[in-house]
Amino acid sequence: MPELPEAETIARGLDRVLPGRAVSAVSVLRPDVMGTPAAPFARAVVGRRFGPVGRRGKNVVLELDDDGRIVVNLGMTGRLIPGADPHPPPPSTHPALLFALADGGSLTFDDVRRFGRVVHIPAARWRAWSRRLGPEPLGRSFTGAVLGGILARSRSPVRSLLLDQRRIAGVGNIYAVEALWFARIHPATPSNRIDPAGAARLHRSLRQVLRRAVAAGGTTLRNYRAPDGNEGRFRRALHAYGRAGRPCPRCRALIERIVFGGRSAFLCPRCQGEPASPGPTSPGTAS
DNA sequence: CATACGTCCTGCCAGC
DNA sequence: TGCTGGCAGGACGTAT
Image (cartoon, rainbow, N blue to C red; front, side, top):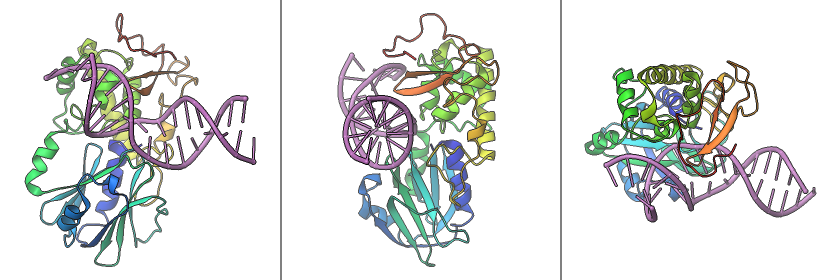
């Protein structure tokens, strides 16, 4: 599932092949992936030349030569596939949006489930758009004190807080679950009950997990592929996510799966003790 | 304001 | 063999 490390891998892959190339045509095959209506999108993009490709949170950001941006949120199954490359890309099975390039190449946004969204952000609106997202967890300014402040301001279960893009940008379920396992914090712990030592462990764990996942090219569970078609190699490094019923790599107790906030979380019941006292009264927290 | 929950969308897989 | 139901889950809209 594309989270920060997957978006980073995709951005780096595209940054090697797209800058300097011009868009000659846009065709929208699946209008529901368009966060900007098709006609204005095409008007804004056709004739523009790509600049650097970067990332903000889970979004791949394609700069244009007029300082506008194409922002791609990959959702669950979105892929960006450059055409006419040295290596043949994986076939596009569910193309949603096609960019024809002036040099004969192409860029395809493919999305099986169509949870992804593509928008055009004019230069004048970029800062405002970016401000809606929380800080970058791998950024220099994301210190332990910053995370501690974010935690202190919320009573939400810490796993839910980590998924909230307005508070921290780029973290999804896989890396939230993994970081909490490393930090030995129960995913349902109310955020403001995490003490400074726990916040410090979580800060370190989160950054370490994300950095390692970026280095491994992300996590492929099923759909995710880098632009070159390669799978992410971080799956084998997962310690808790998706491992219900298997031994905790740290203490050998069996990993549990719980559900809250409509999502699965995985934890070691021995390493990650119960959330302090009563805990959240959410229905359906059976395991 | 903060928090919680339903919804979208399709493919895959276990179970019968 | 073919069907059904559960699951994956990011982000947004609505409700409390």
